[in-house]
Image (tube, rainbow, N blue to C red; front, side):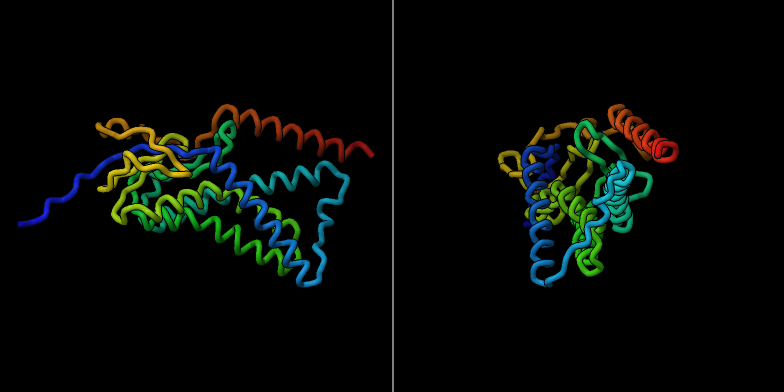
Length: 245
């Protein structure tokens, strides 16, 4: 007699932001300590001249580069999603700085392999690899950008830890601003507890996970206000740098 297939269950989970913030702090400290150990053991000195300038504009440029690095992080997520089977029209990007996130959202169901590759790609490419390159070429800026990226990958690594334990045949889709996601699996997850995510609800109707087609890029009002304010600071400082001696 053929064994009856298990029922596919659908769940909505959300990140535990407090836990992810804690992991982010740990992931900031670890590469900083590794950098200190590298320079200590190699008996060389890290060139930090880039932050010795008294110019406010120089500091602002570094901050802008950090924001661009974080945007690159999300672009790499999107490329990984697409290369592993997701349709380009279902991959969207956004900023919700009031929640502390830039995000890349995959609005279609994808498999476990796709999720894991996408989660790890930015962490490895512009985190671990660029950190090592920064050590080798003695670039404070590249090291700083890499450390920021590694710390910012806390959610990705927490999710990797969650997904690696799940059914290989699961299906995953992100919702909203990607701080929540939908999971289809034959496993019963309704009573399980996780450090990085919490169950928001068990889905009984697919309408609960159906969203309108999103814009390719979505920026929250708070994020727009931040970008405008930051842009004005850059403009004012640039004017002062030109006309004030």
